[in-house]
Length: 334
Image (cartoon, rainbow, N blue to C red; front, side):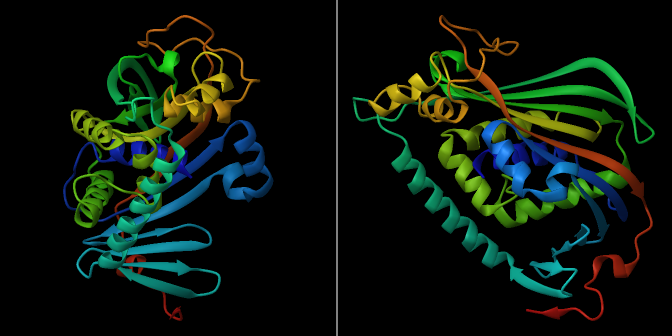
């Protein structure tokens, strides 16, 4: 899902904002994805318990190996061997892929997504695609609250994608807001953050990629996303501390007229993002005021939340056994 990829990218870039020292760590975190509108209704019907209540993941890091375990699946990453093992805990089986395999999948998925995006986005009458603009804003609110026994400060990071020369509400666009509660630097959690960064940089380069298909689709759908994410990553490194609770909200602005923006796009004009979101949000969404710091234009503004991702740290433990980062006995390779 394209929108899901943007939320995951934001969360990972937040986690990668600071690097830590080398230490073993075992932690638990809860991840929940909430989708709104028609997407939410469909997901509610078929998403199951994990979507409704969230997924709790136990993450164990020891040296250059990391095991992430839920109630039914697990993933073991070995940086030295450059292999990723995916385990089916119920069937007691696992599959293995090399980093070369994953890089090949990434290239294939990116090429496919770019081709699909090119077919979906009509050109302007002059034959050129609209140039997209990315804006990034980071603010410390001064608010504080305790999370998992740590005093945390609130930071709001906002990334906006819209047609250059127009506001997000006039042309339509995407607004991604990350509400982050930062604790002072926690050495144990910093190790998991450092591992995440080393893994993605070793696998894909400087820009982290949670899923080959996800990042390929996101960058193809939103021209300039790579540059925007790079800016978010650079600015994010200026933050001091460890994120304990991160809420990433994706909102869409369809522009004046909502689905009429889609019709204008199909005639050969208008923003590709505005047109796409006009169709997604539909006619029933009530106008909402522009986000803080965003200039509004004339006419009714159609803006709505599309999805929200919440990542919360539940517990931290510095004791990690060798078996915590190894394939359990009795498992067979598929």
